[in-house]
Image (cartoon, rainbow, N blue to C red; front, side, top):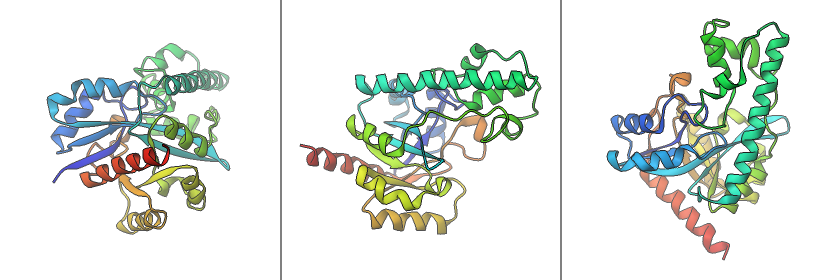
Length: 279
């Protein structure tokens, strides 16, 4: 039986593993298909595709877009899109610029708290792209001995509502869904058991949502079955993945979640169905 892990991050966003390391880990854990789904960037995808043949692993283009609605963070996964699309690249470049500006503001807030000596360049250097995020800042805080570990960096300084926290780029889930659809992709609601916006799913479906990530690390069968029922109710594809970030999420390594490859085939069929409707 073939298996897939459709939610993996690399060092092109806030993961610690290179695309090559990800492929090796997937191979070692019996994964036949992966999706590189970095935050707001696609730069890791061509690197993974370039090396995938060596491992005999299929790489699906993916991305995880940060959005907000009603004060809640909601992440939308996109799959099977054209990652060479110039419109998409331009939109993502805009998001990267906002990410860098956000990081600059968080460093300034830390300075106001008496934590000096952190440079934007050293934080950005931890990401292979401009998709810099709070985990990179947390790594620098740990390296400099300001906090004992990454978790404490979030608890004391940069977690939501913390003294050095700065809100993310504000894109709505519906805008993200429409962006993914506009470049030939299929949109999936990431880890709904964490975002807790079940009442908004019908709106997302109307906007073009295609799937729900029902399989997620450390979730009970009861929770998984609940979201599988929601998926069935709205005729959505069920997906899943480990949401692996490498060293920053040791509780969820690559392959922590393995979904049957038939769900990947259903995702591909959903893409074909959308293409037919849009003709």
